[in-house]
Image (cartoon, rainbow, N blue to C red; front, top):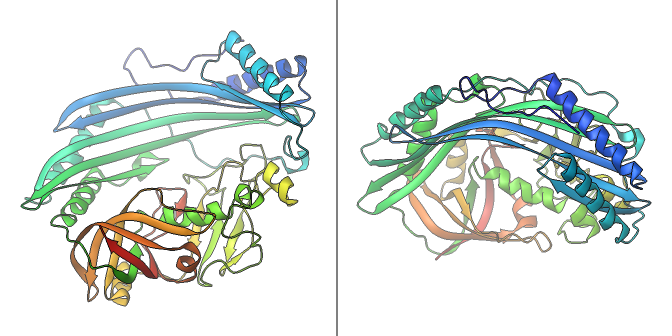
Amino acid sequence: MKRSDLTLDDRNGNPIPHTSENEDALKTFITQILDLAKQEGATAAEVAARDDVGLDVKVREADIETVEFCNNRGFEISVYVDQSCGHASTTDMDERSVNEAVQTALAFAKHTASDPCSGLADADRLASEVPNLDLYHPEELDVSDAQAVAQKMEAAAMDFDPRMYKSDGARVGAVSVCTAYGNSLGFLQSFRSSSYNRMMGVLAKDDSGMQSAYWYTSSRIRDDMDSPQSVGTTAASRAVQKLSPRSLSTGSYPVLFDSSVAPGLISHLMSALSGRSQYLKSSYLLDSLGQTATTRNLTLKEYPRLVRAVGSRAFDAEGVATYDKAFIEAGVVRNYVLNSYSGRKLNIPTTGNASGVNNLIVEAAFEPLANILRKMGRGLVVNSLMGQGVNILTGDYSRGASGYWVENGEFAYAVDEVTIAGKLDDMFKNLVAFGDDIEKRRNIRTGSILVESMTVAAH
C-alpha cells in the first residue's frame, strides 16, 4: 500500500501545494482500506483520510523565533459487523499500521453491543454531485516573505501608542489540506482547501500594570486577509483599551458581547440543538422543534456551500450532501443539528451536519456599533471570556469576563475580573440589538450582540 509522500521542496523549503494526484492517491488509499475491511469480515465500513502541509513562521522583535514545517496525515476507520460498530485511527499510513487499525476496529465492533441506529448514512442522502466551492488557492509561502509580513505587523503595533511595551510575537502561516472520504456503499469523494493566517500578540503598559491582547486575520485566499498594518494596530488598540482596569459594583446591567466573542454565545445555542443533546435529554431546549427559543428578531441559517468560505463543504463527514437550512427562524426552532445516528435516535432524517454546522450566519436587523452603544447607554462590553461555566442541560451561564464599561453610550474605562451570569433561555429571548461588525473569520458569522440584562459580579 504505497502513496506519494507530501514533503517539502528540497530546493527552497517551501511546502508543495497539493495536486489532483494527491487526491487520487488518498482515494486509492481509502479504496484499499475498504477492501481490506470487507475481506476481514466487516459488513460495512467508512474511511476518512486527510493530508496537511503547512508552514508557520513566528517573529519576535523583528527576528525569526521559530519556523515550523508540518506534514500531518492520517485516517480514521469505522467498521460495522451487522449493527455493531468499532472505530480506530492512526497517523501512520504504512501497510502494517493500516492492517492494525482495521483489526483494532473490527475487534471493538465484535465486543460492542448491537445498536439499531448504528450504520452508514442512507444511500439516498449521499452527495450525488460535488460542486467546486473554490476553497483551494495554493501559494508557496517563503520564510523571508513571512518574516517581512510579521515585521510589518510588529512595527504597526509598536508605533500605535507610547504605552505599547513589547511584542508578544507575530505569526504568519499557510496550510494546504487534502481531505477524502469513502464508504462501502460506493461513495468516494475528495477536495482540497487552503488557509492563510496572520496573528499579532502585544503587551501594553502604564502605571497600573501590563495588559496583553492579540488579533488575527485568516482567509482561503492570501490577498483577502487584512493587511499586516491593520492586524498590528487592531491588536495594539485592544491592549491599550485594557489598561487601568477597574472593577464594578455587583448588579444587573446590559451586556454587549463584541464580535470576537459573540460566535461563542451562538455556539451554546447550537449545542443545545445538537442531536446528541436531544437524544441524551441533556439540553435546556429539549423537544423544542417548532417552539420559540430566541427573540423573534433572530434567524440562524446555515449556508454550507458558500464559495471560498471558511466553513464550506459539499458533503459532511458521512458523505451526506449539505444544503441550506434554518435552525432558528424568527426565534422558532426549525431544525436540530443532526448526523445519521442522532437522526435515527430521534426518528428524524439527518441534516447533513456530521461535521457540525457549516457557515452558520446570523440574520437580523443589523445596526452600527456606535448606535448600539448609544442605545445601551450604560453597561458592559465583553471582549474576552474565561472559564467553562456553561451548562447546556440547565441553561445556566456563568463565566469570567473582561472588557470595558460604557457610560452615556461611550467608552468610560476598562473592566477586568468580573463574572457575568444568566440563563441561556432568558439571554437569547432578550437579545435587543445586533451589530453590523460581522465576524467573518469563523464558521459562525455574527456581529456584536446586546443582551438586555445579565448579572455582573465583581471578584
